[in-house]
Length: 212
Ligand code: CDP
Image 1 (cartoon, rainbow, N blue to C red):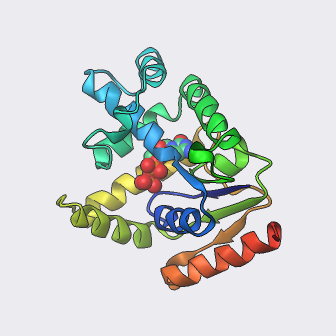
Image 2 (cartoon, rainbow, N blue to C red):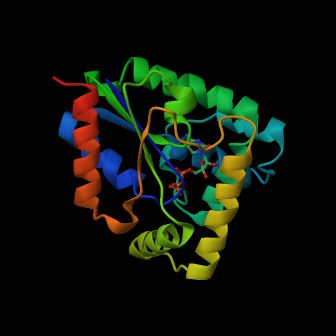
């Protein structure tokens, strides 16, 4: 069983996918982490994230340690991620890893929950249960400022909002795997729902798609 949860930054995908994975005993893949790790690796090597050769080399050389690198959650890593993510050859390298994860979820889990931008449209297009979380940039920027502050990073609302909008624009307008809901996805706007209500709506949808 594969569940995909896509959507723009800071819409609440992380919390929802963690709860779903815990509930079903499935493995979880935060696909954004892969792009962040590539983006950070390019920056760390003094490269330009828009340079295809540098970005592809970083994607091919990705290690488990890169996925735990300090600074992965920074806004610099996020911006760099969205630049490497627009390069088709980088996406190809990461696609292979993601499909392997879906085919054989680690730990012998019977399913996987994917968190990303294109996991229901491109990575696992035949996933039985697809969700798309979205909210206004302002609602998402408020959420992201809180998250950054909780991790001890000083965050200025106006700057976070501007960076989210810049990433949204790049993610939705790129030619390969642009950010958009799959046709068969349930779209949830959590602006006026608390996390429990979003979780309940997701569970109801998934149960209807894959009754046990
Ligand atoms: O945590 P947040 O939602 O801010 O971002 P993320 O999920 O860590 O993703 C960082 C960036 O990676 C996004 O802005 C996208 O450009 C890219 N990404 C992607 O292109 N495809 C994915 N499946 C996941 C992330």
